[in-house]
Length: 88
Ligand code: SF4
Image 1 (cartoon, rainbow, N blue to C red):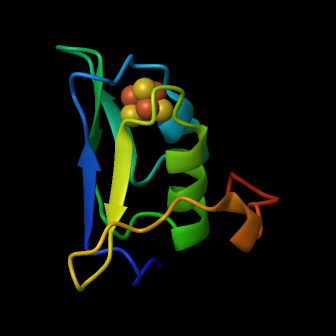
Image 2 (cartoon, rainbow, N blue to C red):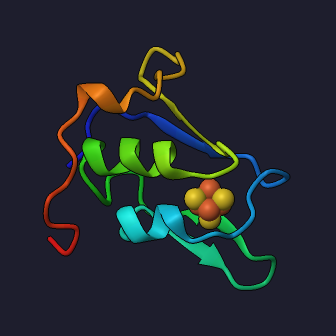
């Protein structure tokens, strides 16, 4: 469960459909086959760490995470434990 993220924004103009976010957080993101742009399918689909990693791994930095106060969450992968089993 996530619990820390109130909103996820994907900048459609930046997204290149690389699939990196889907690889890390497959229950949160998917690629819309019609325009090859990522969409959020479930805000609580994956743990916060997976979603943070997905945002960090996005090549064009198209993913923004926001907390419940409406503030953008700084993408800082040094503060998280990387998922060891992405198949959970
Ligand atoms: S990782 Fe970024 S560029 Fe790649 S599909 Fe996800 S949002 Fe788009």
